[in-house]
Structures are given as structure tokens and as C-alpha cells.
Length: 232
Image 1 (cartoon, one colour):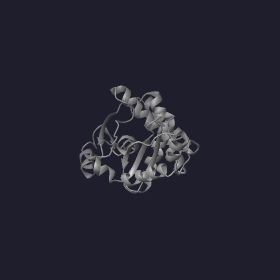
Image 2 (cartoon, rainbow, N blue to C red; image 1 turned 180 degrees about the vertical axis):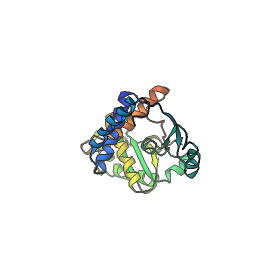
Image 3 (tube, rainbow, N blue to C red; image 1 turned 60 degrees about the vertical axis):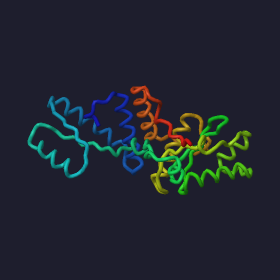
Image 4 (cartoon, helix red, strand yellow; image 1 turned 120 degrees about the vertical axis):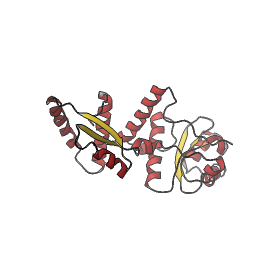
């Protein structure tokens, strides 16, 4: 990590993210602090190194990098399969009808106050929206979204105007992780309908959100991702 040209704030965020990962996997987070002294000692020796970065794709990458084995060039491997890209995955382009037949993570926006509910479904988005609609229609205020609409006397709106497909996937750990991330993100924005009392500080999610905000500012684009609302 210390080999990359990162700002002090970016380097500290990266270090905190690694500590969080170590803690989640039952390792002592303090072991990363010992790497600072080792890196500083290498720098003091004054040995200049030339580094080349390769995106690892398999045996082809290994074959190419072996050519540098006896040279002064040191090799760094990177991957396209990062946490940020997984959490910020944009569903592949599909027609509206196809998207509604998929399962995954979605959000519902209240048409009267723009508060958001984030949920997941192993069924199709079309079928699951009908469940929310029936909860609203028959005054079932147990589900969070229906409870909000009924308590605030708000309308429900049409599926094409209030439902947004956030991530297309099957039931499992990926779906659970993506749902938690988007709930966390909307909690940070102060406009989620889900239970705020279940949200705890998560440094990994914070790092992903901060990274997206930094990139959006540098490119002058809207924060996080472009809207992927279902349109007719």
C-alpha cells in the first residue's frame, strides 16, 4: 500500500479499510501498523526501484512478467474485481420488461416525499412490486414501505416511476451484501425508510462511498452512479 502514490488522507482510508477486513476475518488489525516502519526503512536505504503494474488475467500475465525476473523492474499486480466495482455494479443493459423479470436489489421512492426504501427479492421485481402494492391497498402497515405510505397518507405511484433496479443477482451472500450497502448509503444521505436502528458504522462502505464521491467531483458527474430507473 505504501508503494502507491496516494495522498495522506487516501492512504489513511485505505489503511482503515484493511484493518476492518482483518477484524472481520478474526485477525489482529494492529499487525498492519508494523508495515510502516519496514517501508520507512526501505526508503532510508535510498534504493530506487522501477515498478511496472499489470492487471492480472491468468497464465498469460505470469508468462509476460517472468520476462522481467532478472531485470531491475519490480512487478505489481492489480485486479479488476475490486470491492468498489462489486458494490457499484451496474446491471447490464436490458429492456424494461426483461429487468422486471429479474431478481435482485431494488429501491422504492415515495412519490410525495422522495424517501427511499431499499429491499431485495428472489422473485421477479414485477411480482415483488405487486406485494408492496397489495400491502398498501389492503392497509397492511407491517412492511416498512407500506407503513410509511399509510402513516404519512402518501400515494404509492406506478412501478415505472418509483421502482429502481439497483443490482441484478440471485439469492445469496452477494444479494445480502449489496442490499446492506445501499441501505447504508441511503442512511448516510438521511432519506431511507428502512430501520435506521439496525445500521452500524462500516468503514468499507464509507471508503467505497468516499471513493465514488471523489471520482464524481473530479469528473463533474453526479455522485455514485447514474440513475437506472425503469422507464416505459
